[in-house]
Image 1 (cartoon, rainbow, N blue to C red):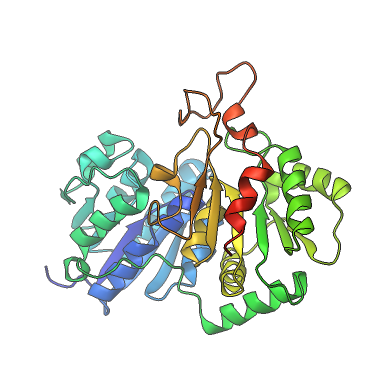
Image 2 (cartoon, rainbow, N blue to C red):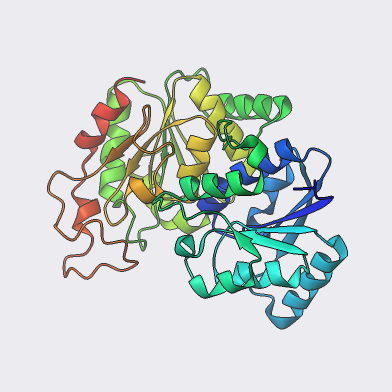
Length: 350
């Protein structure tokens, strides 16, 4: 294939899926170093890809912008005028943007790998069917299709942090946990999310980790503010125990994860976007799984050290169900029955 002058990547959401798609940008930039590459993404995730080498432009998609927002996005896509559009999402929304770009070649996943298969009709060609469960493995097949010169190379999945960003992450981690070695980072989960871990479990883990002499950094995003406040009341900040809450710059978060990895740290988290950003940044992850499975949405490469998938030994037969709501009268026991004692052994080797 002739090297295209302008390439569009369409991967709009969510944070974990955007992280899993970083390999597409790495592969395209390596295969076509002179091409101008743009990434169409939802505004809340734009900062992550704006700092990536090879990403010359970010086209922000406002999913709540209605028709006016869609028309603005169309104008920006047409102004960029890509020759190649790569749909790295595989649903109707991403297919619409690939189509509106006017690219002479539109490519993406094989139809069998699409979430909303009808969208595949806008493609001119597609990658071979991967049959893969994990998002990164499907994207690896797509990367080999759009950048065949890199097909035999290991897939890069990192956010390409600069030396300046890495220094900032180290300084920020030191400010939060001065001199911390082998820190345990805990990313709290939204209590209303079926994938979440209950407050009492986070409380028990924080106490147990501190009793074992491990420094602990507890992270919470905007959706976790209620559980963050409740945990602070019962487990106040103290030397060796810190909180980092609220909206966080994504690349700074990645830099802190990288700094924690350099200090022998580990993240404990449920299935979430920050969990994916952590493993992509080199941090070991213990992922708490119940309704979901690491085979599909866990740290990548699947089943490889130093990452650990932790499930309850007494999980119900319906798990993993991949449902957004639990149908059991008592709620998601598959998550509630994972205990702090289950998690502690996964921290021992760090």
